[in-house]
Figure (spheres, rainbow, N blue to C red):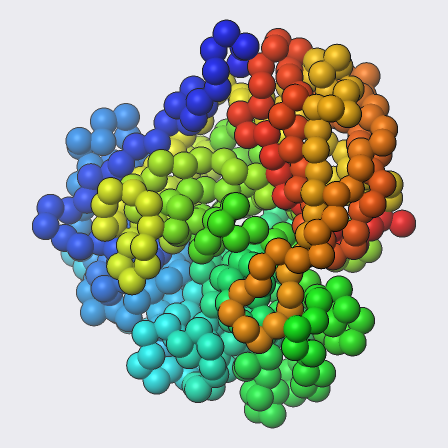
Length: 471
C-alpha cells in the first residue's frame, strides 16, 4: 500500500527489464509469440525469426537465442499453436514448423494470400491470435496510409482454419495492432490521419464501417457484409454521421493526440487473474511514439463499446509495437524506431515488465451513468478529499470528422460536477455531472483525491469516450 510519506513511482509497482538480444543482430520487433517450455519467439520487421530461452528467468544474462527462420516478409502478428508458428506477413497468413527437430523451420505453408500488395512501404498487415473459432483476424493499412491502391486495403479480414478469407469490416486507415478483449471481441488501434481526428481503439464488429471510406470501393468485390455504406460528409462529427450511416461503429476509446500518445500499437488483454495488478480484463495498449504502455477499461452501453484510457507504464527504450502477456503476468514488449521517431535511447528493444506485488493508488475504472460517472479506485479513498467537488475537474471535447489529416479538439465544454457520493467500502465514488455530451471525450482529473492512507494518485487523470449515455 502506498503512503503519503513515500511518493508513488513506477519502480515501486513494476519492474522493467531489457532482455539481451543476439549479438550483432538487428531485431526491430514486429511480433512476439509465447511458446511451450517458457520459450518466446520474436520476429523482426526485416524478416528474421528467433526463439529465446530464458526470457522468464531470474538471471537474464543466461538468455540464449536460436534462429528459427529468415526471409519472412515483415511479420506483424504471430502465435504458436499445436506445433506451428502462425504468422501474418505483409502478403499472406502462413504457418511454419520444424518437422525434423533440428531447431530450424523446414515446413512453410501459405494459408491465405487473397489480398493485394504493391510494394508501398505503408501497406502493413497486422494479424491476431486465433479466435474461439480458430479464425485469424487481419487488418490492412491503406496504401501510403491515404489511398486504397491494392485489393482490400483498408479492410479487416478473418482467415478461417480452412484458409478462407472472410471480409469482416471496412473503413480502416492505419492500424498499429489488433487483439481481443476478455469476451473475445476483436479490437484494433488506428492512427490519427484522414477521417481520424485522433488515434483510437476501435471495435471490429463484423459488418461494421470503421470510418475511413477510401477502401469502400471494394464492396463491389464482395457480398459478405452487405451493400456499400453511405459516403460520410466531410467536416462533420462522428455523432452526426452515425445517424446517417447505420454500419458506422464509433471508436470505442479515443486516445487524445499528444495528451495520451501519438501512435497506438499492440493490444494485450489481462486475463491473468490479478498477476499483474488489479486490472483484470483491462487492455494494455502499446504507444510507439512515446514508448509507453497505456491502460484501457471498456464497457458496453446501449450495445456500443466505450470506456476510459489512463497513462500506465513508461520508460521503454524504443517505440512499442508488439505486446504480449504471459500466464504468469509477465508482459513482453518489442520496440522499433525505424521509420518512426520515438522516445527511448535505442533503435530497437525487447523488454519485460513484472508486477512487484505492490498496488498503486489509481483510478481503476471509470463507468458512465445516466447522470454522471462512477470512479472505482484501487484502494479505499479518504472521504474528506474524495467527497469534495474541488478535488475534481472535468472538460470535454470532440474532433472534426473530415478527410483532412487529423483534427484539433473542437466543441469544448466544461461539464460541472454537482454532487458526490462515496460508497460504504470507500472504493467507489459517484460523480453527478451536469453537461455531459454524447460523442465527446470527457477528461476527468482527480488531483485532490487521496487514499485512506494519505497517498495521492499515481496518475490523476483519465479520458472517457462517451459514445452512449446509459438509459
